[in-house]
Length: 93
Image (cartoon, rainbow, N blue to C red; front, side):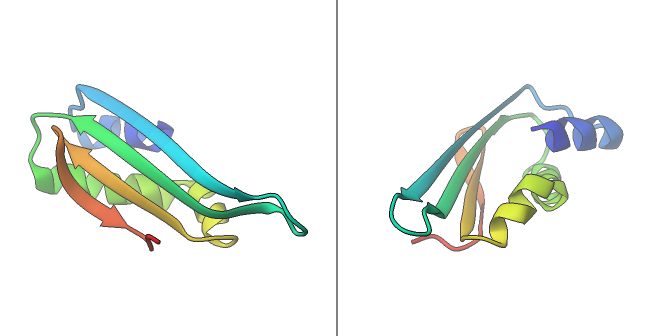
């Protein structure tokens, strides 16, 4: 979320609301850990879908946590703009 805030401020993109949720599948056996992580980002904005898509892809690309997790397991995400699906990233099982 910090990446969204930073980018939108620098780029002059107005975001009225930003909500994120994350869900992971945890394997509690030998070598335990997450084997899949999914996130959803819900944005409310009057900006164009193109601007919000660019913002979302930049924010995800800048995130060191997401980039680290992608080295360990599949990470996928969905971004919604004003309640409508905008983009989907990564693998989904």
